[in-house]
Length: 560
Image 1 (cartoon, rainbow, N blue to C red):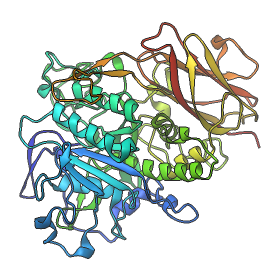
Image 2 (image 1 turned 120 degrees about the vertical axis):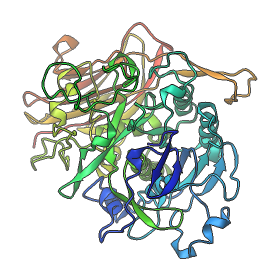
Image 3 (image 1 turned 120 degrees about the horizontal axis):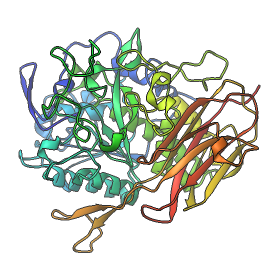
């Protein structure tokens, strides 16, 4: 993730990059790390690019917002004179500066170019995740004082392109709290840019994807968003991307080596406000809320710079575009199904995409009996612990692991989750998803028609939007400089796994009942073979509207 600081790497001055993103090695290995991160060693996106799927993101529009932008042949002539035409590996569909056309030869940098390469890179040995997607990229920063308002203008401009049909937007940058103009600013979801991103998600049905490492400035704005996905990054262990990289800084505030309950000299600690303790709302979101949703590969990725020279880079900046590229592949598949008359437009909903990605993430490698739902990898945190060791596995009020979110992105499993198709409340198959609504004080039930294996895992994810409204002074239905947003809150939905014969939620097998999140997630073993059901409950009182739209995805292991 990029922050608005100054750093030096390999003798080159770079504006707005953290040390985490500056692990640059100008040597191309025999095997491409991008091929690995997108392949079986990583997120398995290459399986979707190959027959019989042949998914490349064709005709899908995705976005990118950063301080700078990638270069584009035909616009940035001074850049393209440096390379042969057959070595232009990053080809954005359109480039902008904020909400205007890009100025030729201005506002380009290696970081944004390399982030774009993860999504749409066309080099045969270093292919992007969605090489045929249409990338719309905008830069927002020209001066040191440019910040959240300008970034919000740029993000809105991207969301409005293609007649408002941009399926996901990548944000590989962040604003430190000490630059937020609010007095005693905290990571409470109320920064201007954070509010804008949540508003854009609902207003334009686009899924924001936020690079989530703290770097050296604390968890930056807008990682405390609600309606998108915040992404951490993993590193390769024995040839597979499956362990949280320590560069995320999303672990505990320090490693208490001597067990005395306080920070001592020599212990690992990122203390943003230098008070020698972990401060809620500064080093983490308020109220104990977890903002990290998903992990993706981000360490030692070989990517082309502006001169088409491949270098190795690391950071969540390069994990987030793995997610955006995967979204383009899933959306291409959804569009095929819609065009054939098999699916409805609900398959395009950002809430559905979010639920599908989170629910299909890898946590624990399946042993071959299907009880771990065919997951391909066991994902570890920086200390070597799995999701089963996390607080989210043990506490019904914590849906996401602080360190692991719901696990690591698996593009192939995400397609399997999506392929199962939409299924309405009532009797449903062992695998599926739905986009629906529930009224305040009521519930919806999904009854699994097949009995489940004893000791098999169940993965369930429920997502819905926080409601943010624009204080639109001139009534033009657009955010303008000087305007603001208002948080109308998050309605409280809960998710229950129950035996099919039970009606009292007090008898539920497990539940996800966070009071502060707009995501509920369950990953638990069923105690006995039998039939089960899922219940979505809209609790009183309402935070905003009395009808709440939601997406739900489920994955279970039926008895053989």
